[in-house]
Length: 640
Picture 1 (cartoon, rainbow, N blue to C red):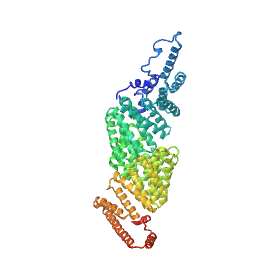
Picture 2 (cartoon, rainbow, N blue to C red):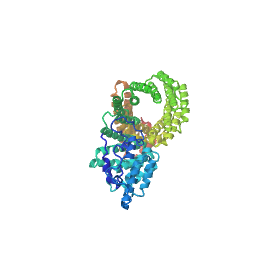
Picture 3 (tube, rainbow, N blue to C red):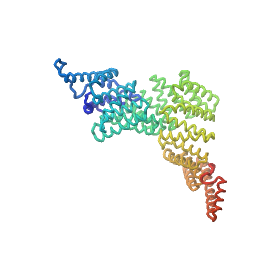
Picture 4 (cartoon, rainbow, N blue to C red):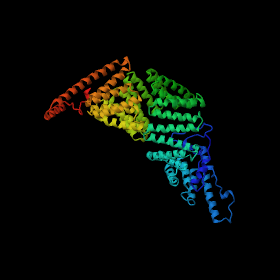
């Protein structure tokens, strides 16, 4: 990507004052793109807009206005100068003071002096420049917001798209995100995005000028949508940001390696491991090419790859990547990251059924951790998991008690980490049939996460788990609000077609059936089946279960023909699995026979009612049906 300084000239006409405006190089703090040559800068932080590079600082403090020659450049101050010349000279000196200011305080002081000599319109770009500086430092975001708002009032004229306007809106989006005003942030960023696309379509600005700002907007949209729970949609913005980087950087630039890893991490966060895999592999290839096999970046890629393979249930591959990662982390002395990688390895060994190996691994690292550290707590959680799988429940519970004792002290300082740990511990108690304890821990996690705007997807997952456990223990009415809440939150976070939403709908339908609400059950079972068919395929066991449930719901409604149709699909799907599911096929055929008998009985009753000519006898039969509980709307949920 070439360095573009010509953007300055294009921006000058937007304000009477000729302050030097940041070039594309100085905008790199917004877009997080490194200087294009060489690709060796540090990876930007997740905050994305808070890192202010040395090059940016030099440019903002030392550049002079393009195309503006002040009187001081031509002649010294002379006693015989006219008042007009003297005023021009004073203005140019104020401008020079602002341009040469090295610190934020100096810039603010120079700006205050300028306010007496320049009108608000002339100060528009200076307000933007100050807002950018304050946002980069991140220490006085309210003041950054005030300057960005002043800049917007100046630059937002006549509905004409311009690069400075787009940058101002992007700045407002960034500041509002940092202030946790996520809805405001989203509004500003969406408008900036529309303006930048209009500039591209009209070709009023060079693509090289637009793309860095557009990248910044896409990245901030990703952050903001993630914060409000729209995670699936947010990944689309992150992928667009990656595409823009690919247009601006060399093909094997290490910065592209990190950007690919960010996309992989985003997919892992929504449990889309298959989608994450190619991005992680590409990151690994780029980092191996640029940095060699033994770099820390390669180790990070391999550790993430291990997580992805675990999600895909390819545990041998996961363990292989983890061991390669550990080797590098050990050589670089990355002790804290090495410890977490070793915990990951133990969990992979547990997944492979190597419980003794896992316990030995964990015993070997537990002494390396401080007594009250979160890492120590997680080691005991993993130890409990291994012992639980060996059915050593007494020792498993002792480990869980130790872990919970450590985590209780961390709740105020690390609520997310503690909530995640409680979720893991609750699963161990669930395995040991200690359902009340499991539910209690999940409710504690739910209460912690509900206070954190960015964790609403986790709240949905916890609600789904609580609802399932309550349903499992027969507390159907208590389960219902948790399952309904989970369905809404997870749809918002992961999209309406995510398989996790399908599982919640399956459980929600079961709850409706238990509460004699077969129509509601049929509706959500239909949603579940559609989602499962798309995400897992129609012949997956969970998709077949959704189809089976749909048949039950229609039977409970008395819609026997629809129930039979879905039951036939169940049999067909199971038969496609071959002889290994012989029992499932027999059970499905038994249910089909029952449905046919009930359908025949219902048909006979209907024929009998049609044969009865007198209205008063029809009422009598209707009353008899209601006494048996077999009316269409009130059929018992246990019809099958």
